[in-house]
Length: 351
Image (cartoon, rainbow, N blue to C red; front, side, top):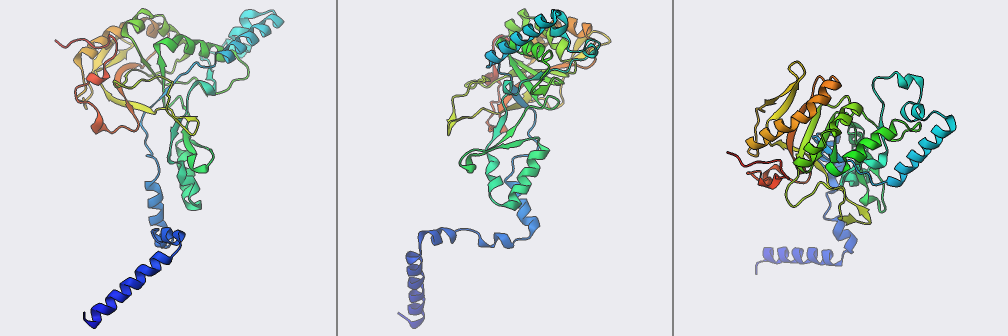
C-alpha cells in the first residue's frame, strides 16, 4: 500500500470514529440544512409559501347537519313563551319589529353548529418560527380561515368556515325539511348566531323520484333564499358517501371529508325569465364524464321549479349536475366513464 493510500485510509477511519462517538442528537442535527437561515429572505419566503395549502381551493361543499334537535326545541319553546307573554302569537313568531314586517328580504342566520368547518392539516407551519408563522397567518386571513389549537401543537389544524356568498351548502333529501325549518326559526330569534342566509349556491343529492315528489320544497327555497343563483345536483363516487357522519378519528377528534365540485356531468339548465322556461346550455369544456341522458333528466326536473321562480320573480338561476370530488383526489384518479357517479333514478340508458 502506498503512502498516499495509507493516509487516505487513516483519514477515513478517523472520520468514521468521530461519527460513531458523537451523541445521537448531534448526528440528527448533522442531517439538517444549517445554511437555511443564511438564504436570502425572498428565497426562504418561497420555501414557506410552497408548504402552504393552495390559495384557490375551488367551490367547496359544506353539508347541513341538523344534529342538535334539543337546541331547536329550545328555540321553539322560547318563541312560544314570548308569544304567550305578549298575547300576539303571529307578530312575535313572524316579525321582530315593524321594520322587519315591511322588509322584503329576510336576514336569516344558521347556528354555527349546523355546518361543519373544513379541516386542513397544514397548521404545523405556524409553529416552525416567526417567519413561517407570519405567512400562514396571512394565508388564513385571505382565506377567512382560523387555526384550531390542539395539544400537542403539531396536531393543530386550519379550519375554513362556511361563507354563504362563496361556498355551497349541501342538503340531503332527508334533511331538506329540517334545513328549511332551521331557516324559519332563525329568522324569528332575536339573538342570532352563525351565518347570514345570503346563500348563492345550494347543492342537493339523493333519489330523483323523491325530489320530484316533494316539489313544494322549492317554494320554501326561493322564499327564504332570494339570492340563490345556482342549484347543484351532486353525485358522489361509488364507495363514498356525502354523509355528515365520518368514522375516521385522529387523537379523539373527528376528521370530516372535504369535498369540492368536480366536472359537470350534463348540460346546464338556465332559467329564462322572459320566456318562463329553462334552456340547455352546453359548456365549452365538456368532460369525458358528460352524459346526455342526464341532461334530459335535468330538464324534466327543472319543470318543478318554474312555478316558484315565477312567483318570486327570480331573474338569474341555473341547475348544474356535477361530480363531487374529494379534496385529496387527483383528476387522474377519476373514472373516465362516469359509472362511479351513478345515483338513484337520475341516469337513464342512453339511446
